[in-house]
Image (cartoon, rainbow, N blue to C red):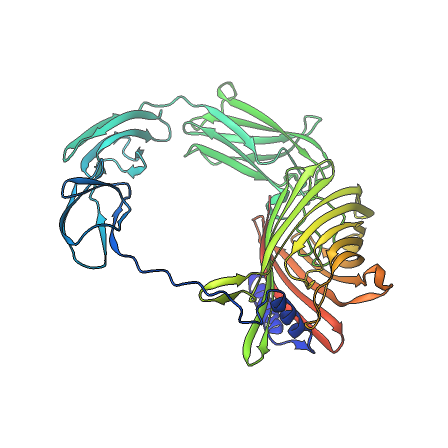
Length: 553
């Protein structure tokens, strides 16, 4: 699967670098450069920074006291601009470090002194029982019988071994002295604590780790254990036997199914942990703890694109929302490159999006990004960076339940970008929409009408200046999605009307996208591949392609 994904990515990048027709790409680039004033040479050149004159002193670490000929000058890093030429005795002092001393011949316009301060150290050796105990002094890890050189000072000593009580102490390290310690750990009484599940409610039909829960707990000594999963009728539906305990942290993963892999109905389930000291199962000696989890098939956590400012496909919002506290963080780029005006030109819209379930059937989506490739520089200074940002709120009105059903949501969105092209069909303004979808098993059909109000107009004409005023137009977004859990495939389109004050009809260019999202096995990470086309006609278009990475939690 990984090789297939890599091959597809290479093919998509090749397509984006070689496929265009007509002048649409040229017009897009020229309009955005014109808006930034990049066609003229009327840049204000900055005066070059004057060269430094004086003595600069730096130390590692910083904040050392600086003395020149016995006179205190300040702390490092320091720049002395009014120092006269001559020979100086430099001393740097810092607590815990040896003094740094040097003679400086300062007869140049500028001189940099870089001093490495040597720490004052002592030595520490420890013997432990048992020998394989974990030993930490300050932030350093040691092994029993080894000698360590440590900066002088007082440190917390922590010694730990499985089956024994933890040992804490304070150790003082003195200059050039060997400090020794001997620690014999006391055996720990067997105990069970910290029973925890990664989710108190989950849907086993969700992909990857999202359809499982991690059950964890801690023990203090050797033993054995067993987990039983009970339904609301107190019937055991699944179980797990642990390997003999050899460390503190124990646990297992439950997929919400029976021992034989059958699905379980929605409901409350109890996870009972029984732990036995030693290697013998004696009920009278068992320690028990339990925790409840709920299987809930309504908790659907799906990966969706945020390209057009709200979750769904590249160009069409979908009606589903994330459940409370669920989060998606993702990044996506789509690129086009070609030879233009005797040089290599490329344009890469790249975004980072955050999708959050707020509860009460609400989802908040935020998006920010830049258009790489249109950065322009003048005398090593960036003078123009195309960027965009949006935030949207989606409220589920009708939830599609089961494998067949209709869903709908209300969507409001606020967007800003500093260019007047509309590659992502997410133009500056306030918009309201009604994303809706029909679910037919794994297939979903999306329709999302949207109304936009903006103070400025979209333009792809390099000869025209962007207009300002009151503009009202609509998007009609459609999509078809195949959701197979760990793999989703989708195609979407976005049609934009002319501003209503200019009559009714479609405005160009229009957009269409093809995408694939694949969850990496045994993770919550998604890989994304996408291909988009922006076109004014069959003879005037260009293609972008690329990919991204997402995380669902």
